[in-house]
Amino acid sequence: MKLHQEKHQIQAATCDLSGSSFQDVNMSGCSFEDANLSGGRYSDVDFSDCSIRDANLSGLQLKDANLAGASIKACRLEGMTIDGIEVTALMTAWKAQQTSGEES
Image (tube, rainbow, N blue to C red; front, side):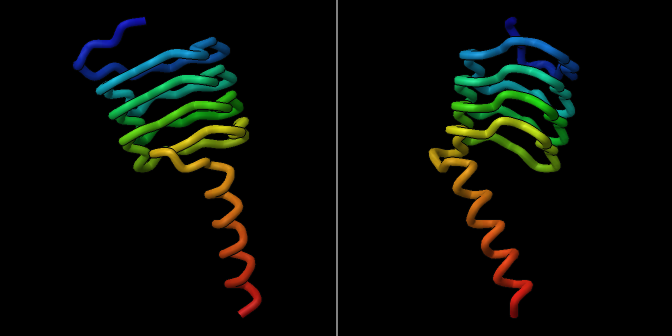
């Protein structure tokens, strides 16, 4: 699939984009459900206001991505990184912070 610089609103269900590579692509407002994005390498991609649900994001590498307003729910996240930081580690740190805030 080749995307041009013009805006496309992608709605994809049960698709396999594993190992895909995107650079400087506007995917704002897109929707992925039950999709396989594992092992992808996405650089300078706009995922603002996207909905990603029940997807396999394991090993996905995001660099310089815009995730403002994005919703990611019920997804496999093992090995997924954002700017080199593993997402599962971020989630663990966030949950620990939330728990310690409740105890104060």
